[in-house]
Length: 454
Image (cartoon, rainbow, N blue to C red; front, top):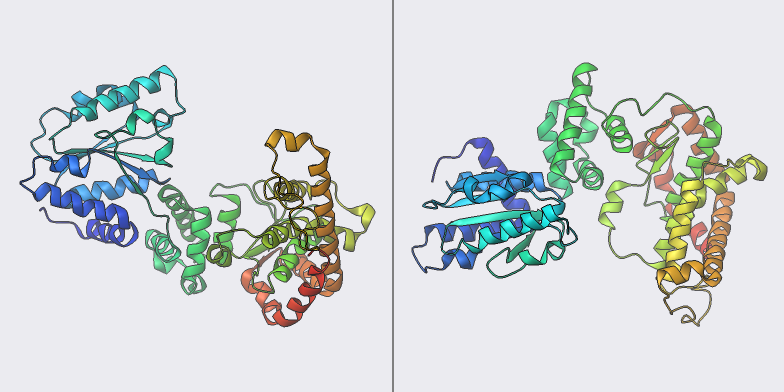
């Protein structure tokens, strides 16, 4: 085995810790290389491997480094080289080799154009001729079930494994390593799990982490300062490009009221456990103001969605509209601010009654089976019953939100004033406003408001 450079060894250690199934396959590959028998040892390992995941770049890097560690060949073929795969890979397989083939639409079962079908045929024929030869071809696809049927045969791509999604502790450290510890403010270094949860949500692939690292390095270098949480939040909400933010809105008060409504209901609905990551009235790419929920809590609570949780999502979505009505007056509600919010809330409500088997009074009566019949999608769109159920459900949620904001108008106005003053509020700002110390009071109010909807 050849010696391994320290950087290579470090990445390999990360692969071992993070990619359980790939590392298991690596140990089997190592065993296969060293075995002198049986004759079909390469068939047992499999000549075709599909890695199920979205991060093809990180997968390629890991397999390239595994090949280096095992002192075997590695070859990358882009999709245009498939037609020449036999000539490019060669016919003399006296030593083991891994061939990493660029994925794309051509590998999917849904691709029926002539070029894709020819590439599938060429690849399949190549793998059929690998019996007894020390070579493995690797593809990356979101799902093994989605690749062309001709690939899913014994002796072709007859093995697949799961690429593990990043975890906060690992992906946060990756960013720190790429940028440099000394370039980050201590508040970020002391909240690595929170940073990791943000990255898992918005920068889950190797390529995007690299783009983020480059943007952060530029900030640290050209502005000659350490990276702050505000820098992370700006890049998360607006992307790594420039020119998507400005210093102010033309209608700061209206937008502050709207975003304060979202923020406060997010806090209240969670019993003060979901403190927004940020709330801002500074415009960015595709928005004039935004509230982002607690990334760490979102990561930790990800999973099945209950009816109650779905209604919470509706209430948070329509809270901006309700806050405008409460503070600015019914006739001064902005025509455009809540449009995306209402579309999102309407979609959730419609899905609840057409897909979930719920009705608009679910939880308010003992008989719970009145809407269990699920129509096909097109039928539900043209049936007034489902539209009316969804509309009534939204009305009930809006009533609950209006009640909640009225009961906590002082807190709503506090957030509005802070937004007008600072323009951008962080997770810490909300805690300094005292929201982290009001759980018992808020929980009582939430229980009262819940009686309106459940």
